[in-house]
Image (cartoon, rainbow, N blue to C red; front, side, top):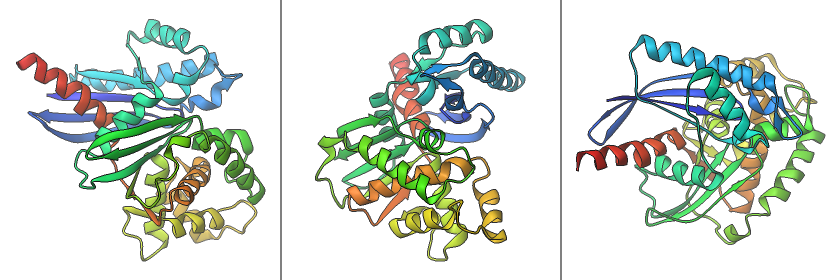
Length: 308
């Protein structure tokens, strides 16, 4: 069976296509539309008509692609900006009217749970932490013996910080300091995660993917799958707007994170705070997350029920 998952996030809209045979899941293609940027169309927590139009165009483009390849099994869900918008229900109804597509809204803690299922499906650690830094929210999970002990979704993300504190591509030192203060205040709300220091940690999402790629390009000690605390600090210092950007560094940014240059440093502010709060020397990057979790927990379970 071929199944497509469309994930509507705060910054990008992604479509991943999977081939599912029995319980084996293989991602065979990923396609994303980076022009949507829903969070930038939020005004007083209301998604503007311009944002709805951009999302409709992106979904119609995906529909044409799926129709051309006769892919009929499609699941669409949203996280971040569309989920948190005050007019979320009205916006989703309008999108369905224009496209005929049903969009499922994943709640914050539900997203954290699906992140966990997707990212830890093949993970060997007995106990650990999972982080997903998105555009509008950050999900945190503490697991033990392959079960979730605690989970939370916090209203702080990379695009949220960028939009709130800077109008430039790269933030200044002063703007990073303000981002850090605001993010630290929001992270303080996760009081039940206090005391979980030194556990193995896994990170998913664009911030960790970009940091891993940039670390591998710049630092010879990087394996491309692990982001060290030292690397996070070095990247935050290296790419500030008020520091001279060398030609080589500009090339590295364009080559490794072309679509995330504006959100990478704000995301790293959150990642850096997480390493400090949980006494982590590094965070391992996983390419699997909420989409894979959705397949394992929803699609495969539903398929199993139908065959019983």
